[in-house]
Length: 282
Image (cartoon, rainbow, N blue to C red; front, side, top):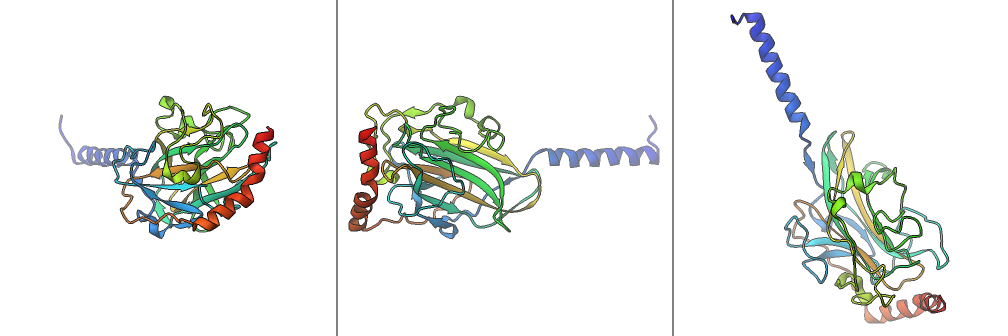
């Protein structure tokens, strides 16, 4: 076949377009700021190496970040206000928010999470992670939710924290099909005074999810933040936490705040007695 100038131009144009299409088909990977010391946190947030039941994530980083209700004296940290149940409402918790990062349309953010709890059966401690617009902190998407127990689906994930239209784990969590909650008395130092105990003797509701990867594709380019948090329910006892990890998380970590022993004793004695009494009556 004779290659005329016109045909040569057409073939070159098609080749160029093919290259553009193949490049746009593979989404770029984005990550929040790597240094947790630059994030804004409330309550008990920090980083740990492998610790008890919470191993290092599949990413192979030397440490992971976490938020925990253990030893946290911060109240009202959740962006949600869930309906109260027979044992009370949301109490203390922790939250950490990244600095702003840029993402393009179709870029992906991949974060690993591991939910751990010593609570359950009515004491519906829950954790969440969501993406915000950096400019006005408005919600872009929920990327993870989990709850100690709930009266609806009875699934730890998503735990009826938000509606399925807002967060569907089957669409968001890449390994959700293989997920099974490990029910046991949780061993994780981030849980503070409730480490290695469970408020129910059979450990129902206590345990951990293991590492699950959340993958989110941005619909449009912009500047964003990542928010991760956890809240206690009904009282301030029997704590819950959420570990997280992502590519390029640096070794420069925030130190977990440790209250003085006196303040911990007063906190637990003054605020938890009602919870313990309610559980005994139940």
